[in-house]
Length: 325
Image 1 (cartoon, rainbow, N blue to C red):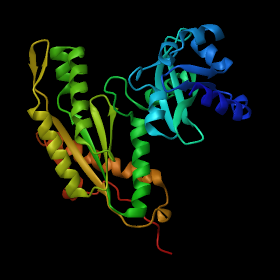
Image 2: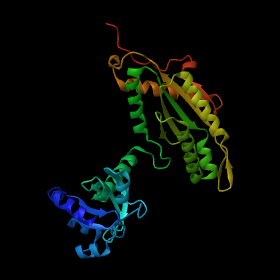
Image 3: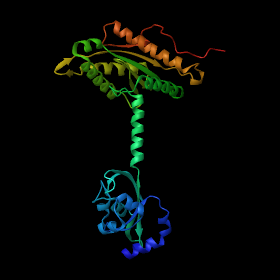
Image 4: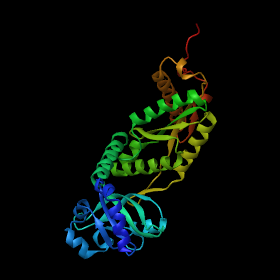
């Protein structure tokens, strides 16, 4: 069998020489038969030591070794494989993230006698991408609640309104404000206030759909952008969320903190194509203003309630339309 592999190596030597990644050829017994310098560097062993150790998993241990190591996966598949973000370890690198590719080595009769594995070390790239993603997430989220910040939430509202110009399914804004939050801070302390904000954020996060966006708008105020939502749907969502918060028992350092919220909703359901709107900012500002008006109505009428702007019958500005020619 080793002779068959050697014949395969001789036949494909030209291809092996141009491989830039580390590569290793392993027989059916998981013994390393052939490899390049990049593989010895990856293992942290000399050429002779690699041959002496012999077993692939003893040189380069992945999380699936030994029972289902990459070489065995090639044999099982009987064809090419690609494994992304494989965690591994070697003498040279205690922690590695790699991309592993493999193809079976076959005899002239078609019998699988071993496998060729290519191994690319992507640890640095993966960690860099992770840091970039974390920094990007930090730039659009609120540190305490881990919800989106005001800037990102308003940008999401702009995108939702633009999308609505195509599908005309409606966009709703829900303004959510914790009642008597200053009293919570004054009575129980600012750490208790932070706890209330964090629990409230969790309730809101769990209440929205994947297509919706919830953000901390400032202090104890939150904004929820509901895609494909009409006034009725917005009110149902707001009422359900208000009730969930009221029913949630919050305790901080053994003290019960009763928490409620006032909410206001407003919806954009115009079907006029987006190109006809004079300014997207006017639409965003007007919609937020209407939701705020509804919120203040809830505050002024006993708190712990939902007010729908469309039911008020007041004019808080109207969605701008293109003037008739």
